[in-house]
Structures are given as C-alpha cells and as structure tokens.
Amino acid sequence: MKIKASLRRLILSNFKLDVLLAISQAINENLTNDELFHKFEVLLRNDLNIGKVVVFSYNNIKWECVLESGYKVNSATIGNLETEMLKYREITNIISVNHPVLDVFDVIIPVFHKDNIIAYVLIGDIEEEREGVSPTIKHLHFIQTLANLIIVAVENKRLNQNNLRQEAMKKEIELASKMQAMLIPSSASLPENKEIVVAAYYHPHSGIGGDYYDVIKLGETEYGFCIADVSGKGISAALLMSNFQANVRALFSSKISLKLMVTRLNYTVMNNANGEKFITLFIAKYNAATHTLEYINAGHNPPVLYKASAKSIGFLTLGCTGIGMLDSIPGIIEGIITVEKNDKLLCFTDGLVETENEQGEEFGDDNVTACVLKDQSISEMVADLKIQLDAFKGSNAYIDDISILGMEFF
Image (cartoon, rainbow, N blue to C red; front, side, top):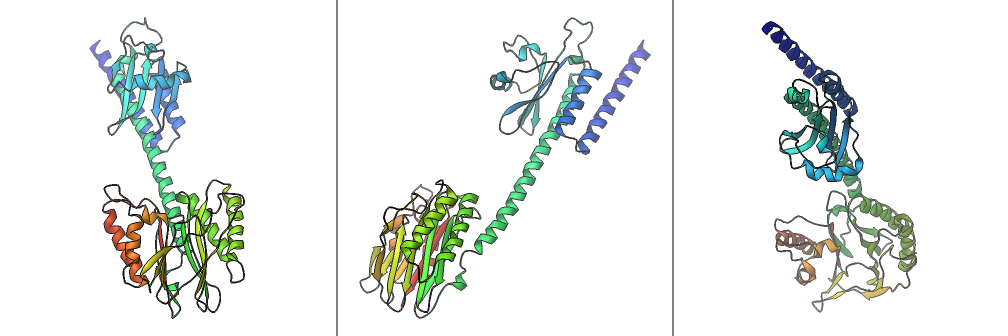
C-alpha cells in the first residue's frame, strides 16, 4: 500500500510538473488570453475534477468575468460582487457568505501583481457529498500556482501592450512637436532692422500646443503679425491651430482688410471645429512708413502698448468676440493707432498671466505691466519676463501653453 501511495504521489508530482511546463511554454508562445484561460479551465475541470471555476480580473478600469465554467455569472451581480471580493486578501474558505455568487463556491483565491490584487479565482465542487478529500482542497495550492502563473502573465502582457502604445504615442507626439515647431517662426527669422525689432518666446505645455504667433512681411514697409490661442490643450488643439496657421498664411496680404480676414477665419474655424473649440486672436498690420498700426482683438488678452515719450502704457482692446464662437461675428471694430520711435508692444497668451506659484497665486497682469515699464529693449523685456516667470512658479509645472510676442518700433 505504501508503494502504491508513493507511486500515486510520484505520478501526481510528474503531472503537475508537466502542466507547469506546458503552461510556461504556452505563455512563451504568446497564446491569446482566451487560449490561456481555456487551458486553465480544461486542467481544473477535466484533470483535477474541479466542478466550478470562475475568474474575475481587473483591467485597470473595471472588474470583469474572464472565465466561467460550471457556473454562469449574472452580469448584474458583478458590481456588488466587487465590494464583497475585495474583503479577501488571502486564500479563504467561503463559509455562510450571503451573496448570490460567492455562496455557491468553496474557496476564493486572490491573485496579486506586486502589492495589488488583479484577479480572484473562485472554485468549488459540484458533487458536495462525494467521498474522500475534495479536489478543491486537495489541489488548492497547485491551483493557486497555476492561477498566478497565467493571470500574472496576462497582466504583464497587458502592461507591455500599454507600454508599446504609450511609446508609439510618445514618438508620434515628438514628431508632431517637431512639425509644429516648424510652423512657429524661429528667433533668427524674426524682423530686426531699422524699422522694427521683434522678439518672441514659445513654450508648449505638453510637447505640442494650441498657441501660435506669426510675423509676415506684407510689403516694402508693411508687416503683418498675430498671436492666437486655441481653447483647451493637447492634440486636438494643436491640430486646429495648425490648420488655422495655414489659413492665416494663405489669407494675409497687404490687400485684404483685417475685418474681412477675421470674418473668413471665423467661417473656417466654425467649419473645422463644429463649435466645440474657439480661438482667441490678436491680429495687426504695421506700416513703417506711416507708423500706423491697425489691429483687431478677437477675444484675446489685450496686448500692452508702451509709449516711450510718456513712459506710460495702454491696452489694445478694440475688436470682436473670439474666432469660432459664433456662426457670424455680429460686429467687428478695428483699432487704428500711431506709434512713435521706441514704442513697444507686448502680446501674450493667457498661459503667461495664469501661471501659478507654489501658493496658488497667478503671475497676473501686474507683473507683466511692471516688466513693460522697465527701460529695456524688447529682446531684454521678453527675456526678463521668462526669467521672472520661472522664478515665480518655483517648483510648479507650467499648466498651459505660453507664447510671448514683442516688438519695438523705430
């Protein structure tokens, strides 16, 4: 009898080793999740005589039933079951549990990935009155080992796929960022001559942004420039802004009036964004021969105009509602001013004034105007603003795209 018992144990041990090897090979062969769980089901039901097997898995969003054999789970009970299952953090014999699912099983096995429970295996016998040791109890630790092997492999596969998707997305965003940067004028391309000097700063919030500025030579002594900000952040804002930039470039000329240009841009944005996003815009033309500046402020942060002779500031507010807010802009007011030698104009997006420090305070308009009132060149002013902003925010991260466009007139 002892020899027969030893032989049975040897046969069972060899069987378990063969099973573990087969499961390991299946994982290495990258079988699908359904195929792995099917193997798990066959082993428990056919080879180990387990009557009922149900596996609940957490997919990083919600709990779902990934295997049910010998028992049909009512999907309506899963939400309530989650609260009950999470009480168990170790293998537990289920006794007198008043629950429509748990009370028909014998044992609940939690499966961990690191310190987090990622699955529960419920097992039980159909033949409650069978003689001898229940296979549920007899093979419990082997079942736990199999469950851990398969479910952790499935979780690692999910995490790996997520990592691959995130890496692919990261590369796409990097490429999009490089392409978008090509749409923003480089510092070297900005005008710097006896008529006008332009300086700028651009910082997208997350590699790609919804801010845009541009400076375009329209004629011998005429310049066009604009600064714009799409509502929201991320890829959708960046795509809309890229389309907007292309339309600005196509329309901007010395012949088209700013009113007509804003009207056409509004029509284009409404068609492209379907009213889901809008763009604030400051757009202007400067004639260096007449020293005349024409502008329209379409819902944008008012640019600050520094008058050198009076050492005072003003704000350019005339214009209309934002681009893409309404099907038709009800009224557009065009501002016309005369600038003098050494006057400066500072344009910016709301990311500048809304940057917060560690106490939750915003950088605000006062810090901007204080910087404008300093006796410094436009290039020094933009650089000074950047230094002050970095010091102000401290360890806080930037929460929005930031663009600054400044010009000095001669």
